[in-house]
Length: 105
Figure (cartoon, rainbow, N blue to C red):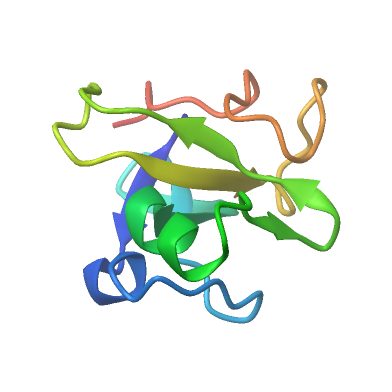
């Protein structure tokens, strides 16, 4: 899935802005990192409260719901991966990209 660098204040702001993804995704390549995608993340409770219970979407792409408890140990979120810099055989908006590895780390 790569290494996610997350901007915490953006995750907690309850907004989605196509120009400001909450996470940048990199794949390790020796001592360097290759930029492979972004992830949009929003706190589910905040979003649903401010949007009449309607789940988020971006450019027509529905976000995935990640309930709580979860493997991250955080409250429920909505998230959307965009593999714009590394093709994904399963689709550009699918969570997991089998072409991205952390083995070079």
